[in-house]
Amino acid sequence: MIIMGIAACRAVSFPAQADPWIPPKGSGVIKPVIRFYHSARLFPLTHFGTTTSPTHSVENETQLRLTGDHGLGRDWALEYDLRAARATKTKTSRHGTASYQASGVGDQEIGLVHGLRRGRFFADSIALNAVLATGSTTSNPQLGVGHNAVEPDYEFGFTHRFGSHFTYGSFAVGPRIFTNSGIIEWRMAGEVGTEVVRRFYAFATFFSSRTFGSNASNPKASNAAEYYNIARIGLGIQYKLTQSFRPLLQYENDVAGQNIHAGHRWVVGFSWNY
Image 1: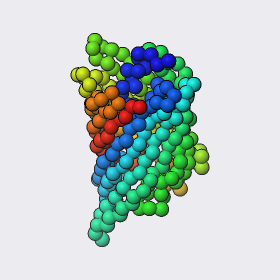
Image 2: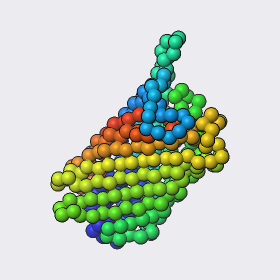
Image 3: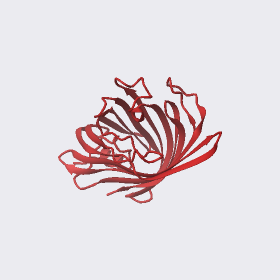
Image 4: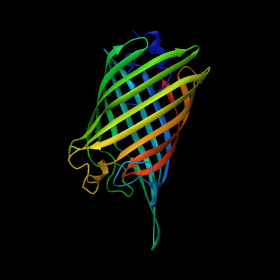
């Protein structure tokens, strides 16, 4: 059932929640990565913008992230985004400097995706994910937002060849709906890439989230952890070492936001197709 365009597309690992190509039953891709995050600046509290200001709270995080999808058959797949992290926060005041540290699991995401159309150059699907509030909210820094959510997504992608260069794109859009408050985050994610030379891929990513809801204009509300706006872009490289194993390196930068730290991260890891 897997035609040439789909098989070629599976040669590159897409982000979780942004892969409309459904793998055959029993096969899939798994991508473990380590993300090194740093932030010493803050986006505006009152409006969405690109300007930042220094913050008295410097944040660093080393996060282990495991994403992937697994074919279940009949155009269904299981997808997941599992996280654990070690986070530190350093606060400076007139009384001196204080450091705080927390380690443990973060909030987890798992769901089902169902393929709609599968062609040689285009595919799309729908997904329903559950966001589980397993990250601690009593630690300092917090490792989660403390509230469950559901996330229905529409995903679509394409493949194309410019001469001998294989090119792909994969995108997802949908709301994250917090079950406790009705807060809605409209989220978009995507990745486009091309085979620069044989076995060597370059790719670009983007992610954005915009918050809506009855309390969305009040960042001081009890559900403040759910309220933020962010836009992030990234660039990366991936090498096809074997048919299954592909190491990767990526840099991401927060380019605009509101009520959230402005930071950047390095990502190192690999994808494994099975």
